[in-house]
Image (cartoon, rainbow, N blue to C red; front, side, top):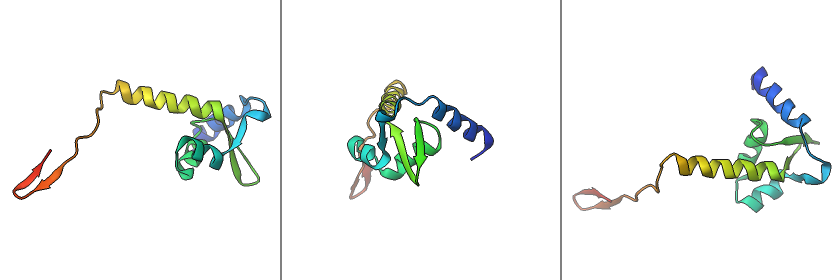
Length: 95
């Protein structure tokens, strides 16, 4: 992590909401259907509001909701459609 990332993460931590909005990353991962390592990555990269206490990441639930909604919107606006399934056939591959 470079100094810019550390500064960005510290800035986000200073903008935190009251304590009752903080939930354990593993609980939020289950709720949102994310892998726990992905939620940890979002926290470390400063993509969501997060803090680390006693070796555990705590995230602001609303911050994770905002991140998820932005990601969905970006995917929608990118024009990426569902990836077509490719099936093997006797003479090659077909869609």
